[in-house]
Image (tube, rainbow, N blue to C red; front, side, top):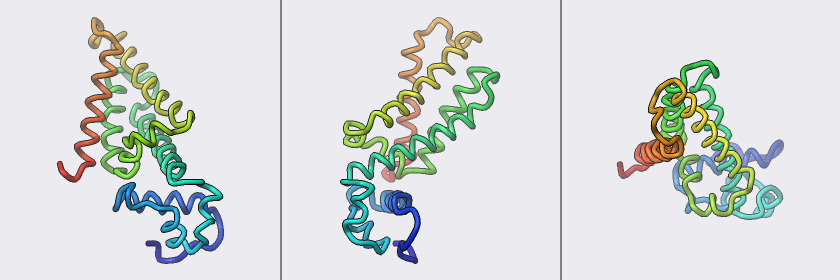
Length: 174
């Protein structure tokens, strides 16, 4: 719970920030709009002006998480003239590192209900991330790395490896 209740400013962002805190400690099951309203000191109806339901809030958290992930992956990849294999390796590491530092975002993104009911914007951002990875694979192949392999299969291998590693580093059981 925050030390000072919310009174003025950007309620939408305050709700997102508090939701991320709750998700980090208690998971999606602990998240409720009514509890967020209580934590922020607003009426229980106030959050519904920004998020009609819990699914809408989770989707907004997921979109923020993907935005941050893309920013970090782009920064890790570096300039476009870097060798493709280095860009690919650093993008993969950036994803796993991002998940380790942001387990709440990662778990929301792995939530099948969020993905199934997510907006086209969320799907577009996830496809964009895959397209960036595919471009790095194609660049690395053009430079001689695994040039005989199907780039689609390499992308599936990369996504499986990075998703699996991200799950391992964010799951307390491991």
